[in-house]
Amino acid sequence: MSGSKRKTVLLPQVGLKVKDKLYLEGQVLNLKTKHLTVRHKDSFWKNMKMLYRFYAPKSTKLESITIDLDGEKHQLFLDRKGFFRSNFAINNHSSFSPQSIRYFQPDEQEIYVSGVSQNDIFDFSNCETGVISDIDDTVLVTYATNALRRIPNILSRNAYKRKEVQYMRELYSIMRDTGCAFFYVSNSEMNLYLLIKLFLQHNGFPLGPIYLKEYKRLKHLIKKSKKQGVMKYAHKFERITFLLQAEPQMKFVLIGDSGQQDPFIYYRVAIRYPDRIKGIIIRNFNRDDNRLNFYKKKLEEIGVPFMFYQNMKEATEEVCELFGLDYETTLSSF
Image 1 (tube, rainbow, N blue to C red):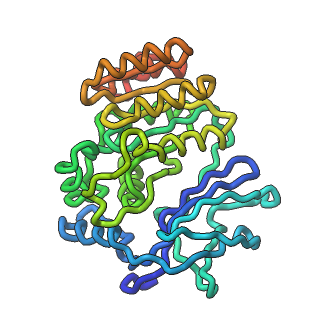
Image 2 (cartoon, one colour):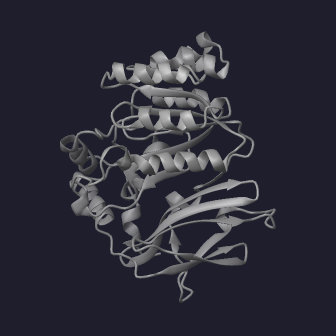
Image 3 (cartoon, rainbow, N blue to C red):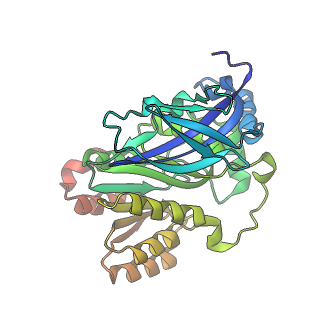
């Protein structure tokens, strides 16, 4: 496929299969497919150009598209930014495969699904524990609370050159080896999906659905949101609640950082669903001890462990206790 002309592209495609149901969401864009290829050696200027394309994509004029699930077709309605969210019964598709899903425009031209997103439909039917993780400053260093550092960081470093938060990969590998499913829920905008997915792959983090906020235009990248307080983080609460409802067989560990509203959001989730939350782990990088101790005390009253650390290697002992692992053996992983 030639990458020099604009194509109707689906990016991302985020899917979760739960028994006989498929939950699916995605974004339809008009992009040159060459902008979907990122290499480690890409220059600063190429990274800048690519990000510009993702923050200034040509809007789709489509109001709907068609999804083909093993020959069964459904209409998907798009919002003004090309986003859709839907679910489908797939009880008659015993041989269902994510690779069999195809998307078509109203004129029956097939929509290109980016390779980085093609297999992003996950089935965690055999998992009893799920990890719901933040991304910004939890696994990926982003300086999310400091726009003067965040924006240059986004512009100057591609997915292969971004810094990971120390010890998080090792901690997540321990959890993955116990059979945990992983879900990523972030307030980062969907423009950064490609960067985030490639970063997780490149650095060996466990893969899972990545739920991001709606696309931003370039002018909104530095413009302060009009939403105040916790309303700015409603997306994260809603997506976590969705996962708890979609995966009723699981108990969840919630992992985030103290830089934004993760502690408060996770506290609200745990108060509402105390029997579903196995534990909460916070990276306390800005030393917000007073606030975190308040949540810890409140959640201990309802039996939900709340842990916070400045150095995430220090979390190993309590994580071992949470998952029934031998501490000395596990410590050798770091």
